[in-house]
Image (cartoon, rainbow over all chains, first blue to last red):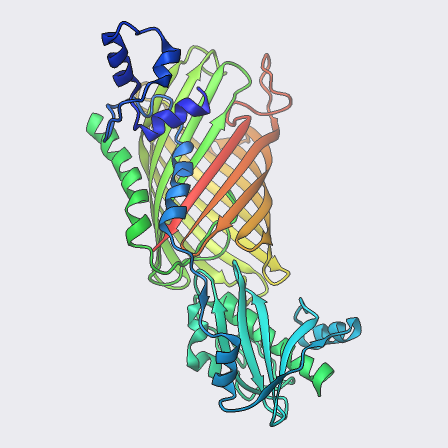
Length: 228
Length: 293
């Protein structure tokens, strides 16, 4: 039983028996080639028992659901803040100047050693604040996509504030909660930034909590190595 | 019988169609990176997931053997560490040409019929994201009406238990999991009244890597052994194959192709090529699709 016939049966919109009846009336009962060229009469609803599942190839039923899911579920990229909005949220009224940097291999290795977090990108999206602080846009790995967030550093290298800019994960949206983000404020490069130590975990959002905490730890190490 | 079959099919279709456009809000995930291997994640508290699984098992080295196992599963997270599921199972068979070594005359062409139900409980002991490794415990009582191999009518009970271990690497983009599964089964064949009991032992291992956002590819292996009367091992088989997994925010699918690579004992007079084809089949395919709501 080929794929086409499975599909015919599973979609069950086209009833071959109906077509045969039409052709029998026109003395064309055996002409199966012509039969397939005719516009088939569409039967709505369930066919009689045994028609769909005579071959029982239900492997195609889940596959048939994929287009349904793809069509019915909208795209979901959730961008909460643009770069400008994040800058104004963390440093309201401050003047920021772009100051991107590129880490050397040695710097990247040292940052990884100190933070115990992977340096995925050596180009750092950085703005210098007039009062001496820094504004950094960073990404960490989510379960399915990257999580984009911004970190504001005070002039002394401690965390002023973080903001989630883009979150596109299945779950873990709770990392946007102000209370959770607030516990990162004041941390410096010496802080452990470990879940259930100095950072509270959000149950059900553990992966996002851990990766953002690791990302902030890496940024604080970047400050020590490349910005201080 | 007609209404039983009809209602089961309606339930399958309705379960897939109804949640799709209406009830999908925010997704949560106990998404399955593998078809056969379980990960340690559980659904967050209050989250729901509905799955449809289809497993195709083919070829006994002689004649025609094709079987399809279909499971409709509803899963709910009671806490962030504990989830429970209800499965409704369907099964169909096409057997002819002396495919069954134990019963060469058996011919069966049966469409999808209600096979039974399972209840699953899974508890996450250690989180793979914040502990050294992930650890979950799983237990699944089941009731069965159709024998998996022969398609004969049975009254069967099983108790599947799993120890699930998982370790992630490279920012959780590479996942490695291992399952130890023990399943004692008791069944009575309706036609003959014969009773049978056995223990199934499985070791499964899987590796999966996120090669693109949303896309994971991996390999999974399975060792399956059967101990009739809970005593001496009667047969065992090794399976190894690739899988692909895609996850969007509110739904995901996983497809695994799992051919048997080796097994014992081999059946004389069959094109077994070193494989065990009485308790196992030559090829298995499994497709899962799930929706979160």
